[in-house]
Image (cartoon, rainbow, N blue to C red; front, side, top):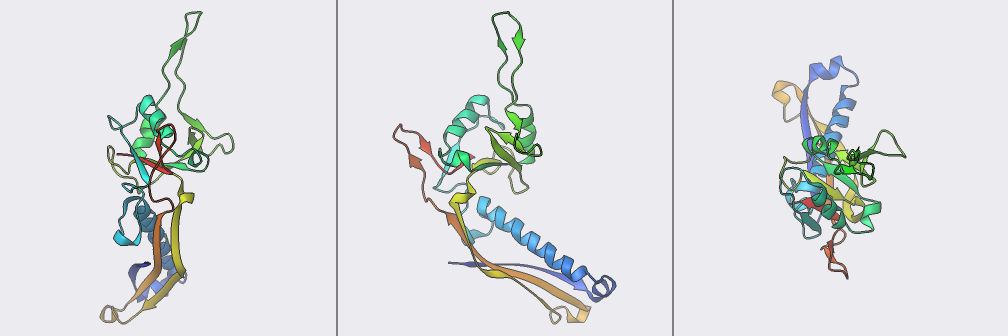
Length: 220
């Protein structure tokens, strides 16, 4: 069943008269807000029944971190919980706070036969294909504002969004009305979109070796 999502904002006649392109800007900002809440609902179910969230769903593997940030061993277990096929197409989605913790995460220092220390290597790497992108286990890192606080399920995740079905009906509808705020001489602008979404695979999978994997993995 498709739900209906709308965003609205009033604007005074003076603003609209004094700035000729303001109406175009209003619609652009409303659509941007709509997109943010859709993304947030896909992850965290902020829109209720419109979307099945990734975090906490039966399709998502919950990985345990003892502290706020993962240790190297916990990060390795997290990666192994990702469906093998999803490791090639999924990406990391993390909070700004978790990003700061990844910046300093390194492998353990070692000592070679000549008895000099080899410094630990950073887990956080720059993409060889695109220097502007940063990677972990070779997959892109996305720092998103929809990520939740440290030590909560939505702060750190690896998601293959190709395995999430987002359905829309038609295009974004945009319109305006002068009746609601008639006495204050304002015009109300609105955008509407009908949407629904759910993971394509309803549950996690247990491989032949006993490993439980999924197209989505988040910390618990």
